[in-house]
Amino acid sequence: MTNISRRSLLVTLGAATLGLAGCTSSGGSDKSTDLSKNRTDAMDTFAVGQQFKATAPVTFSTLLNDNPGYPEKGNWLFWTELAKRTNVTLKPTVVPLSDYENKRSVILGAGDAPFLIPKTYPGQEAPFVASGAILPVSDYVDLMPNYKAKIAKWNLQGDVDTLLQDDGKYYVLPGLHEDVWIDYSFAIRTDVLDALGLQIPKTLDDLHSVLKAMKAAHPDSYPMTDRWSQPTPGGALLQTLGQAFGAGYGGGWGYQNATYDAGSDAFVLTGAMDQYKAMIDYAHTLVAEKLLDPESFTQTDDQAEAKFTSGKSFVISTNAQELVNTYRPGLAKSVPNAKIVKIAVPVGPAGDVKVGLRLENGLMISKKARDSKDFVAMMQFVDWLFYSDEGQIFAKWGVEGVTYTRDASGGFQLAKDVDYVGLNPTATKKLNVDFGFSNGNFAYGGSTQLLESTFSAEEKEFQKVMTARKTLAVPPPHPLNADEQEQFALWEAPLKDYVQQQTLKFILGDRPLSQWDAFKSELKGKNGDQYLKLVNTAYDRYRSKKNGSDKS
Image (cartoon, rainbow, N blue to C red; front, side, top):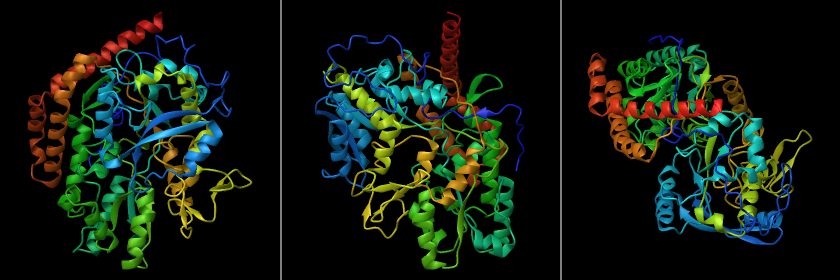
């Protein structure tokens, strides 16, 4: 495996940052100050730690991303208890998960959007900013004491600034995490390791050696086969490898064409980086030595899972839920004595680091909500449900004494007849399916303690290792104005598609790495230089504005 100098780590550009940045803090600017006609049913004073309750019953409309795993029910305890605690009834417009993004665009375009638009990932709001369909929520965060308190307490200002548009405002209220949360890594058969006298791999070099030993002992097998390759080939695998090499998201999930280089204080083309080439070289070596199944980049999840759970392969990408809900039950049927663990992400040339923003999917607010007589009450309600400790516990765990209890140390325990993510497998009811809690529309973000409250002891150990790693700095904002965003949109997808296509060819051996310089030249033909100039021009403009405001 090629060694890369750590003198100047290259920090990946998260999906939430590209083209979406601006130049002011989370407090917003140009506040709309006259809310005297919009305070009906609002609390006169509302502060951190205070239960929100509208002074009279009020109804707010919301879009609802309907997950087939827990389809919406009108009699969910979530709805009735929410109304009891807050005096707010939510009126959902239910949209199937498979059509949510398209339907959301259509509704917003027609001007018919509900007031609240959850399940919006940072970056997805950009198309609706220019049309004026959504509210610049940063103008109103002074109405949200819990939100502001968490940003200050967890030092989230840099993360939130990645949401700023060129006008210095932002238009989505994100889910806030206390720390960067890493969920994806590799599952490995420890019974196979034990039989071969091997240790759990801690580095990518270790992983290479382990796979070679497995191949020697099982010459007719591919020791590793992988999943999550549709629609992005190598989505999970390349994301993991890319971060380990300091090469952004490595052509996998979340890949961005530009990565911030702290050494030069500028953005560079991700696909042309030496680190990216080294990542490709590593993945190609695994394929060439028949350690990694080449079908990993084309097969369905079901095909990959079948190979692993039947005992044909021994390593596969995983997250916490798939380890427990898919791999272990599948192996128990085919290989009863098999033992597997989710290993800490193997360390690569980038060092003992983790990469990512502490923002999750969040909430857009329809522009027309601003004219509602209950606008202030709505913002207080949003702040309580999505950002207060009490609201987050309610959305995640439900009602104490009904769906959960607390132990002497403050820990959470599901009620005996309630299950969630396999924590109480013999229970007859499910927290999300039957009660509506731990619903992705309303339950996200929060403290590390709350996040881990539904984790198994095994997963908590994994998180302990990952939490101890250094979090790389968030890339700086770089606003694109309306004209630049239009040009950016024309160049972004073709350049990204070409890099990912050629990455796959290099890895599978369909194109030799001796053609690397030719590939980098080809990126120029895909408007790579112009694309990079656009991003760096925007960054320079942001930096000048920021420096100017700092001096004022």
